[in-house]
Image (cartoon, rainbow, N blue to C red; front, side, top):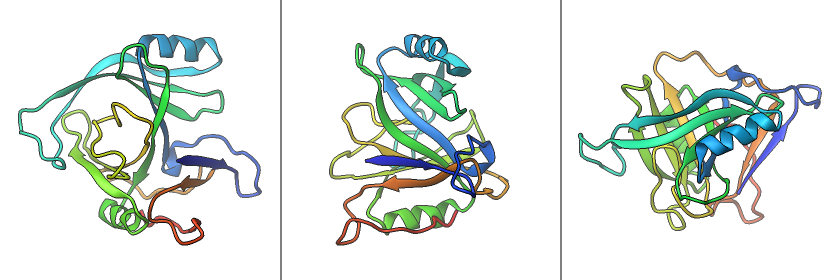
Length: 199
């Protein structure tokens, strides 16, 4: 389960800032073009129109070097400016929130930190030639054995996506998002553990 808490330094909502490390949610939809139109009609902003993006192979799980996964996707933003990546999978399916995306500047330390809190690495891939970055997807492997380049293609489980951009500046920890709350099998006895992710 995912929960987002928004709040500025004084506790007031501050709105989205791209420098804050939080990159938004991911929704799996049956029809990306229809979802983009609905977002536009309901006060959202279209950040990138529907297009087919070819994603290269992942290193975990290991895929052949020639594997290409074509995904129809788009990015919209809600009225507060928070981005939502939409990708198409499952014809006729309604929207399913299936991932939260965060930028990190020390991807290995961040991956280790989340693993110590019960999440497992489900996918690791370089994003070349689309972008000079890598993506690490973490989640509950018992409930979700695999995930695609944008997120799980089926089911109700969500993943955490960490993106490391080569030569990226440090995350400024701003942007109105106070915390990302994750429920995982590795939580403490009371089910609550607080901490600051290192990257």
